[in-house]
Every structure is written in structure tokens, then in C-alpha cells.
Picture 1 (cartoon, rainbow, N blue to C red):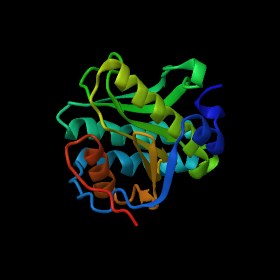
Picture 2 (picture 1 turned 90 degrees about the horizontal axis):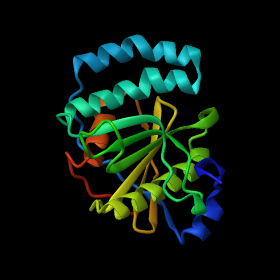
Picture 3 (picture 1 turned 180 degrees about the horizontal axis):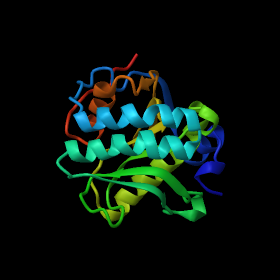
Length: 207
């Protein structure tokens, strides 16, 4: 078993999860100015990615430039990894490849403090990507505990590149944001990513 094999009911039973689905995680996140570089890059790449319409195209042409911008905006205090094996506990099915991992460390040679796990939506089905994303978030939580990283929250995102849906793991509570965010509002999307990395702070709004 690996991250991609999990279904939500099994995941909930195995790890004693509590799911909160009607949560507004990031509506209060402030917008962050976006560089001319990112705007110009996405102006060139977005239409190409949508025309190609493959996960690899969206990954390389939309998601990766946004994460490059995030790394720059944080003063290169975070790192990100693409398509890396993230095996933490194979006996629990916590193994496999993550599309992207954002780490709270400038170290780019290896993952050291994962805070955000990103999966690309298969067939543009964002909800269908929740189980594997949550499983990898649990793996990140256990990885940080093992390494002595004091990170109280692990975040996740499932994205088509243009549409983003965020999740949050707090101990055994999984919060799934009721909102989707879109790449046509880059300031908001980048503000959320900056908030997740701790450069900005926002309190989730519960129902």
C-alpha cells in the first residue's frame, strides 16, 4: 500500500482521524504582492499548460513557477521538492511519491521539515485527491515528530494547477477548506502559501 492506495473511510479508521469539512481556513489570509517575473511567466505558460492538459504540463508550467516565487518571497528560507519519494512508515502505507513538498528549511538537497504536501488532482478531480494528500500529511507529521521538528500543523493542497483546495492536519483533526482558490488571483494564492510557511499568520474560521 502507498499514499495513492488509500480511501477516505480506511484512512479515517486506521489513523483515528476526525474530519472537519465545513471550515474556512484561509479567507482571512492577506494578499501578497506578486513579482513581475511570476506574472510574465504565467502569462506565457498558463495557456500552454491548459492546451497540453496533462498533469506533467500543469506541474512544470503552473505549479512549479508559483513555488519558485514562494521560495523567493520567503527570502529563500524554504525549499520545495518535486516528484520525490517520501517513505516514512511502509508498514502503515505511509510511502510513495509526493508531487511537491514544501519544507521549512533552505536546504535543497533533502527534505528536512515538511510543512506543505501538494498533490496534483487526477483527471481534474480535486476531491479524489484528498485521501492520498491526507496520508502524506500524516507521514509528514510523523517525520517531523521523529526528527524533532516542532511544527504543530501540517498543510496540504490538491490542485489542478489553476484550482487549489487546502487541507490542514492538527494532531488527528483534518480540516478541509470549503473554498477553492484560483490562479487568476495570484495575490491571494501566494498569501495563503506565505501564511502556511509562517511568514503571515491567519486564524481558521470555524462554522
